[in-house]
Length: 342
Ligand code: 2P0
Image (cartoon, rainbow, N blue to C red; front, side):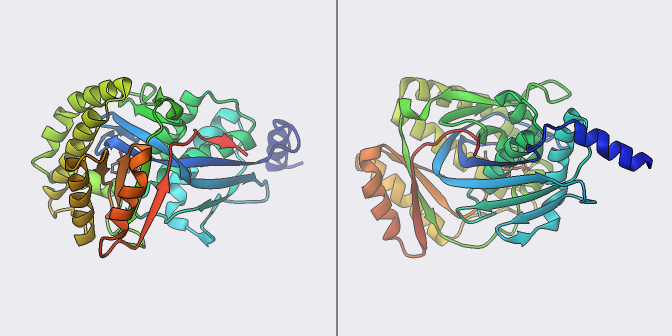
Protein backbone atom coordinates (compact mmCIF):
# COMPACT_ATOMS: atom_id res chain seq x y z
CA UNK A 1 0.00 0.00 0.00
CA UNK A 2 1.39 3.43 -0.89
CA UNK A 3 1.73 6.16 1.70
CA UNK A 4 -0.96 8.20 0.00
CA UNK A 5 -3.38 5.27 -0.04
CA UNK A 6 -2.74 4.70 3.65
CA UNK A 7 -3.26 8.37 4.39
CA UNK A 8 -6.47 8.32 2.41
CA UNK A 9 -7.75 5.30 4.29
CA UNK A 10 -6.81 6.83 7.63
CA UNK A 11 -8.61 10.00 6.68
CA UNK A 12 -11.68 8.09 5.60
CA UNK A 13 -11.77 6.28 8.92
CA UNK A 14 -12.01 9.63 10.67
CA UNK A 15 -15.52 10.15 9.33
CA UNK A 16 -18.64 8.30 10.21
CA UNK A 17 -19.98 7.03 6.91
CA UNK A 18 -22.66 9.04 5.16
CA UNK A 19 -21.49 12.35 6.60
CA UNK A 20 -19.23 13.55 3.86
CA UNK A 21 -21.74 15.83 2.38
CA UNK A 22 -23.76 18.55 4.03
CA UNK A 23 -25.88 21.49 2.98
CA UNK A 24 -26.50 24.71 4.82
CA UNK A 25 -28.47 27.90 4.42
CA UNK A 26 -27.26 31.26 5.68
CA UNK A 27 -28.99 34.57 5.19
CA UNK A 28 -27.60 37.88 4.08
CA UNK A 29 -26.99 40.58 6.62
CA UNK A 30 -26.24 44.22 6.26
CA UNK A 31 -24.63 46.52 8.72
CA UNK A 32 -26.32 49.47 10.38
CA UNK A 33 -22.93 50.37 11.86
CA UNK A 34 -20.44 49.44 9.16
CA UNK A 35 -17.30 47.38 8.88
CA UNK A 36 -14.82 49.18 6.62
CA UNK A 37 -11.09 48.50 7.01
CA UNK A 38 -8.91 45.77 8.43
CA UNK A 39 -6.56 45.56 11.41
CA UNK A 40 -4.95 42.37 10.09
CA UNK A 41 -5.34 41.43 6.44
CA UNK A 42 -3.93 37.91 6.83
CA UNK A 43 -6.36 36.89 9.57
CA UNK A 44 -9.04 39.18 8.14
CA UNK A 45 -9.54 40.97 11.46
CA UNK A 46 -11.63 44.12 11.05
CA UNK A 47 -10.33 47.50 12.18
CA UNK A 48 -13.73 48.33 13.69
CA UNK A 49 -16.67 46.52 15.23
CA UNK A 50 -20.02 46.54 13.44
CA UNK A 51 -23.72 45.99 14.11
CA UNK A 52 -25.98 44.31 11.57
CA UNK A 53 -29.38 42.81 10.92
CA UNK A 54 -29.81 39.39 9.35
CA UNK A 55 -32.54 39.15 6.70
CA UNK A 56 -34.99 36.30 6.14
CA UNK A 57 -35.62 36.68 2.39
CA UNK A 58 -32.06 36.75 0.97
CA UNK A 59 -30.00 33.64 1.39
CA UNK A 60 -27.21 31.40 0.14
CA UNK A 61 -27.68 27.64 -0.05
CA UNK A 62 -24.36 25.84 -0.06
CA UNK A 63 -23.55 22.21 -0.52
CA UNK A 64 -20.13 20.83 0.47
CA UNK A 65 -19.11 17.40 -0.70
CA UNK A 66 -15.78 15.94 0.44
CA UNK A 67 -14.51 13.79 -2.37
CA UNK A 68 -11.24 11.82 -2.03
CA UNK A 69 -10.93 11.72 -5.83
CA UNK A 70 -10.52 15.50 -6.10
CA UNK A 71 -7.00 16.93 -6.47
CA UNK A 72 -8.17 20.45 -5.63
CA UNK A 73 -11.22 22.19 -4.22
CA UNK A 74 -13.90 23.19 -6.70
CA UNK A 75 -16.38 26.02 -6.51
CA UNK A 76 -19.56 26.46 -8.51
CA UNK A 77 -21.40 29.66 -7.65
CA UNK A 78 -24.79 30.31 -9.21
CA UNK A 79 -24.11 27.61 -11.79
CA UNK A 80 -20.68 28.88 -12.84
CA UNK A 81 -17.18 27.80 -11.91
CA UNK A 82 -15.52 30.65 -10.02
CA UNK A 83 -11.77 29.99 -9.88
CA UNK A 84 -11.00 33.54 -8.73
CA UNK A 85 -12.96 33.04 -5.50
CA UNK A 86 -11.43 29.67 -4.78
CA UNK A 87 -8.52 30.91 -2.65
CA UNK A 88 -10.81 32.40 -0.01
CA UNK A 89 -13.04 29.32 -0.06
CA UNK A 90 -10.08 26.92 0.26
CA UNK A 91 -8.59 29.01 3.07
CA UNK A 92 -11.79 28.55 5.09
CA UNK A 93 -11.98 24.87 4.24
CA UNK A 94 -8.31 24.42 5.24
CA UNK A 95 -8.98 25.77 8.74
CA UNK A 96 -11.77 23.25 9.19
CA UNK A 97 -9.87 20.38 7.55
CA UNK A 98 -6.95 20.98 9.86
CA UNK A 99 -9.24 20.76 12.88
CA UNK A 100 -10.77 17.56 11.58
CA UNK A 101 -7.34 16.14 10.74
CA UNK A 102 -8.16 15.43 7.11
CA UNK A 103 -6.97 16.68 3.74
CA UNK A 104 -9.74 15.63 1.41
CA UNK A 105 -10.71 18.28 -1.12
CA UNK A 106 -14.25 19.51 -1.50
CA UNK A 107 -16.73 20.29 -4.21
CA UNK A 108 -18.63 23.41 -3.16
CA UNK A 109 -21.86 24.29 -4.92
CA UNK A 110 -23.49 27.50 -3.79
CA UNK A 111 -26.46 29.48 -5.02
CA UNK A 112 -27.85 32.82 -3.95
CA UNK A 113 -31.52 33.68 -4.33
CA UNK A 114 -30.48 37.31 -4.99
CA UNK A 115 -27.87 39.12 -7.14
CA UNK A 116 -24.28 38.10 -6.35
CA UNK A 117 -21.52 40.65 -5.73
CA UNK A 118 -23.74 43.68 -6.17
CA UNK A 119 -23.58 45.15 -2.70
CA UNK A 120 -26.21 42.80 -1.29
CA UNK A 121 -23.90 40.94 1.07
CA UNK A 122 -23.56 37.73 -0.92
CA UNK A 123 -20.13 37.02 0.57
CA UNK A 124 -21.64 37.25 4.07
CA UNK A 125 -24.32 34.64 3.51
CA UNK A 126 -22.04 32.62 1.23
CA UNK A 127 -19.20 32.15 3.69
CA UNK A 128 -21.49 31.60 6.67
CA UNK A 129 -23.25 28.84 4.70
CA UNK A 130 -19.90 27.42 3.54
CA UNK A 131 -18.52 27.12 7.08
CA UNK A 132 -21.74 25.61 8.39
CA UNK A 133 -21.97 23.06 5.57
CA UNK A 134 -18.25 22.20 5.64
CA UNK A 135 -18.30 21.69 9.42
CA UNK A 136 -21.31 19.42 8.91
CA UNK A 137 -19.57 17.44 6.17
CA UNK A 138 -16.44 17.09 8.33
CA UNK A 139 -18.56 16.13 11.34
CA UNK A 140 -17.04 18.96 13.37
CA UNK A 141 -19.05 20.30 16.27
CA UNK A 142 -18.36 24.03 16.15
CA UNK A 143 -19.93 26.44 18.60
CA UNK A 144 -21.60 29.39 16.85
CA UNK A 145 -18.72 31.57 18.07
CA UNK A 146 -16.15 29.22 16.54
CA UNK A 147 -18.13 29.18 13.31
CA UNK A 148 -18.19 32.98 13.37
CA UNK A 149 -14.39 33.13 13.76
CA UNK A 150 -13.84 30.77 10.83
CA UNK A 151 -16.43 32.56 8.66
CA UNK A 152 -14.69 35.87 9.38
CA UNK A 153 -11.55 34.53 7.74
CA UNK A 154 -13.53 33.99 4.54
CA UNK A 155 -15.28 37.35 4.67
CA UNK A 156 -15.55 39.75 7.60
CA UNK A 157 -19.27 40.31 7.23
CA UNK A 158 -19.87 36.53 7.15
CA UNK A 159 -19.03 36.33 10.85
CA UNK A 160 -22.34 38.14 11.42
CA UNK A 161 -24.50 35.90 9.19
CA UNK A 162 -23.85 32.98 11.55
CA UNK A 163 -26.46 34.63 13.80
CA UNK A 164 -29.99 35.90 13.29
CA UNK A 165 -31.71 39.13 14.25
CA UNK A 166 -29.56 42.01 15.51
CA UNK A 167 -25.88 41.06 15.66
CA UNK A 168 -22.71 42.74 16.90
CA UNK A 169 -19.28 41.95 15.49
CA UNK A 170 -16.35 42.63 17.82
CA UNK A 171 -13.15 43.78 16.19
CA UNK A 172 -11.15 42.17 19.02
CA UNK A 173 -7.57 42.77 20.13
CA UNK A 174 -5.97 39.32 20.31
CA UNK A 175 -3.07 38.90 17.83
CA UNK A 176 -4.48 35.55 16.71
CA UNK A 177 -7.97 36.94 16.01
CA UNK A 178 -9.55 34.71 18.65
CA UNK A 179 -11.69 37.54 20.08
CA UNK A 180 -12.80 38.81 16.69
CA UNK A 181 -16.25 37.26 16.37
CA UNK A 182 -19.91 38.18 16.16
CA UNK A 183 -22.61 37.50 18.71
CA UNK A 184 -26.35 38.10 18.92
CA UNK A 185 -27.51 41.42 20.35
CA UNK A 186 -31.28 41.00 20.15
CA UNK A 187 -33.60 38.42 18.60
CA UNK A 188 -35.38 39.59 15.47
CA UNK A 189 -38.76 38.75 17.03
CA UNK A 190 -38.06 41.23 19.82
CA UNK A 191 -38.06 44.13 17.34
CA UNK A 192 -39.30 42.90 13.96
CA UNK A 193 -38.02 45.62 11.66
CA UNK A 194 -38.51 45.23 7.93
CA UNK A 195 -36.44 46.32 4.96
CA UNK A 196 -37.10 47.40 1.39
CA UNK A 197 -34.05 47.16 -0.84
CA UNK A 198 -33.97 49.35 -3.94
CA UNK A 199 -31.91 47.62 -6.61
CA UNK A 200 -30.52 50.40 -8.82
CA UNK A 201 -28.00 48.35 -10.83
CA UNK A 202 -27.56 44.70 -11.67
CA UNK A 203 -24.23 42.99 -12.25
CA UNK A 204 -21.17 42.89 -10.05
CA UNK A 205 -19.61 46.06 -8.70
CA UNK A 206 -16.38 47.39 -10.19
CA UNK A 207 -14.38 47.63 -6.97
CA UNK A 208 -14.97 44.88 -4.43
CA UNK A 209 -15.19 45.64 -0.71
CA UNK A 210 -11.81 44.14 0.02
CA UNK A 211 -9.82 46.33 -2.35
CA UNK A 212 -12.05 49.31 -1.53
CA UNK A 213 -11.20 48.97 2.15
CA UNK A 214 -7.49 48.62 1.46
CA UNK A 215 -7.51 51.68 -0.75
CA UNK A 216 -9.45 53.72 1.82
CA UNK A 217 -7.09 52.73 4.63
CA UNK A 218 -4.01 53.52 2.57
CA UNK A 219 -5.02 56.78 0.99
CA UNK A 220 -8.13 58.41 2.47
CA UNK A 221 -7.39 61.33 4.80
CA UNK A 222 -10.72 60.55 6.49
CA UNK A 223 -9.95 56.91 7.28
CA UNK A 224 -8.39 57.61 10.70
CA UNK A 225 -11.41 59.69 11.68
CA UNK A 226 -13.70 56.90 10.50
CA UNK A 227 -11.94 54.35 12.72
CA UNK A 228 -11.59 56.77 15.62
CA UNK A 229 -15.30 57.57 15.86
CA UNK A 230 -16.67 54.05 15.43
CA UNK A 231 -16.89 53.08 19.10
CA UNK A 232 -19.21 56.03 19.78
CA UNK A 233 -21.52 54.96 16.94
CA UNK A 234 -21.50 51.35 18.14
CA UNK A 235 -22.47 52.44 21.66
CA UNK A 236 -25.27 54.66 20.36
CA UNK A 237 -26.67 51.90 18.13
CA UNK A 238 -26.41 49.29 20.90
CA UNK A 239 -28.34 51.59 23.23
CA UNK A 240 -30.97 52.39 20.57
CA UNK A 241 -31.52 48.69 19.86
CA UNK A 242 -31.76 47.94 23.59
CA UNK A 243 -34.43 50.62 23.97
CA UNK A 244 -36.12 49.85 20.59
CA UNK A 245 -35.62 53.56 19.89
CA UNK A 246 -36.18 53.75 16.12
CA UNK A 247 -35.36 57.44 15.72
CA UNK A 248 -32.07 57.11 17.62
CA UNK A 249 -31.09 54.07 15.55
CA UNK A 250 -32.06 55.89 12.34
CA UNK A 251 -29.86 58.87 13.15
CA UNK A 252 -26.74 56.96 14.08
CA UNK A 253 -27.10 54.44 11.22
CA UNK A 254 -27.47 57.11 8.52
CA UNK A 255 -24.59 59.07 9.99
CA UNK A 256 -22.38 55.99 10.12
CA UNK A 257 -23.25 55.00 6.55
CA UNK A 258 -22.48 58.41 5.10
CA UNK A 259 -19.27 58.58 7.14
CA UNK A 260 -18.11 55.24 5.71
CA UNK A 261 -18.83 56.47 2.19
CA UNK A 262 -17.06 59.76 2.93
CA UNK A 263 -13.96 57.77 3.93
CA UNK A 264 -14.25 55.78 0.68
CA UNK A 265 -14.81 58.88 -1.45
CA UNK A 266 -11.68 60.39 0.07
CA UNK A 267 -9.51 57.53 -1.24
CA UNK A 268 -7.09 57.93 -4.14
CA UNK A 269 -8.41 57.18 -6.69
CA UNK A 270 -11.85 57.92 -5.19
CA UNK A 271 -14.41 55.21 -4.53
CA UNK A 272 -17.92 56.24 -5.44
CA UNK A 273 -20.29 53.30 -5.11
CA UNK A 274 -23.44 55.31 -5.87
CA UNK A 275 -25.33 56.14 -9.03
CA UNK A 276 -27.98 58.79 -9.56
CA UNK A 277 -30.83 56.55 -8.42
CA UNK A 278 -28.91 55.78 -5.22
CA UNK A 279 -29.01 59.47 -4.32
CA UNK A 280 -32.69 59.78 -5.27
CA UNK A 281 -33.54 56.84 -3.02
CA UNK A 282 -31.53 58.27 -0.16
CA UNK A 283 -33.38 61.59 -0.50
CA UNK A 284 -36.76 59.85 -0.71
CA UNK A 285 -36.13 57.97 2.53
CA UNK A 286 -35.02 61.14 4.27
CA UNK A 287 -38.17 62.94 3.10
CA UNK A 288 -40.36 60.07 4.27
CA UNK A 289 -38.84 60.21 7.73
CA UNK A 290 -39.15 63.99 7.86
CA UNK A 291 -42.86 63.54 7.12
CA UNK A 292 -43.26 61.09 10.00
CA UNK A 293 -42.76 57.72 8.26
CA UNK A 294 -40.40 55.57 10.37
CA UNK A 295 -37.71 54.67 7.83
CA UNK A 296 -33.99 55.18 7.42
CA UNK A 297 -31.43 54.19 4.79
CA UNK A 298 -28.14 52.42 4.62
CA UNK A 299 -25.87 51.79 1.62
CA UNK A 300 -23.05 49.26 1.38
CA UNK A 301 -20.23 48.94 -1.13
CA UNK A 302 -22.59 49.12 -4.07
CA UNK A 303 -25.38 51.29 -5.48
CA UNK A 304 -28.34 49.57 -3.79
CA UNK A 305 -30.25 51.41 -1.07
CA UNK A 306 -31.60 49.54 1.91
CA UNK A 307 -34.49 51.21 3.69
CA UNK A 308 -35.12 49.91 7.19
CA UNK A 309 -38.58 50.59 8.59
CA UNK A 310 -41.21 49.64 11.12
CA UNK A 311 -43.55 46.97 9.69
CA UNK A 312 -46.58 49.25 9.20
CA UNK A 313 -44.49 51.65 7.12
CA UNK A 314 -43.02 49.04 4.79
CA UNK A 315 -45.69 49.17 1.99
CA UNK A 316 -45.37 52.95 1.81
CA UNK A 317 -41.56 52.85 1.76
CA UNK A 318 -41.57 50.13 -0.87
CA UNK A 319 -43.99 52.11 -3.08
CA UNK A 320 -41.93 55.29 -2.74
CA UNK A 321 -38.75 53.46 -3.80
CA UNK A 322 -40.48 51.73 -6.73
CA UNK A 323 -41.62 55.10 -8.07
CA UNK A 324 -38.06 56.41 -8.42
CA UNK A 325 -36.67 56.38 -11.99
CA UNK A 326 -33.67 54.05 -12.15
CA UNK A 327 -34.96 51.69 -9.46
CA UNK A 328 -35.02 48.34 -11.23
CA UNK A 329 -36.57 46.30 -8.47
CA UNK A 330 -37.43 46.45 -4.79
CA UNK A 331 -36.79 43.41 -2.60
CA UNK A 332 -38.52 43.21 0.75
CA UNK A 333 -37.58 41.23 3.82
CA UNK A 334 -38.09 40.80 7.50
CA UNK A 335 -35.40 39.75 9.96
CA UNK A 336 -34.16 36.19 9.74
CA UNK A 337 -32.43 33.38 11.57
CA UNK A 338 -28.78 32.38 11.77
CA UNK A 339 -26.99 29.85 9.60
CA UNK A 340 -28.32 26.30 9.74
CA UNK A 341 -27.76 22.86 8.30
CA UNK A 342 -30.54 21.73 6.01
C1 2P0 B 1 -20.51 45.91 6.18
N1 2P0 B 1 -19.32 45.86 4.04
O1 2P0 B 1 -20.32 46.16 7.37
C2 2P0 B 1 -19.61 46.61 5.19
C3 2P0 B 1 -20.17 47.90 4.72
C4 2P0 B 1 -19.50 46.60 2.84
C5 2P0 B 1 -19.80 47.98 3.29
O2 2P0 B 1 -18.73 44.07 5.18
O3 2P0 B 1 -12.83 41.74 2.81
O4 2P0 B 1 -17.25 41.41 1.90
O5 2P0 B 1 -14.43 39.83 2.68
O6 2P0 B 1 -13.90 40.89 4.87
O7 2P0 B 1 -17.15 41.26 4.42
C6 2P0 B 1 -18.33 43.97 2.93
O8 2P0 B 1 -17.10 43.47 3.26
O9 2P0 B 1 -15.19 42.14 3.15
C7 2P0 B 1 -18.81 44.63 4.12
P1 2P0 B 1 -14.04 41.10 3.40
P2 2P0 B 1 -16.74 41.94 3.19
O10 2P0 B 1 -21.43 45.15 5.79
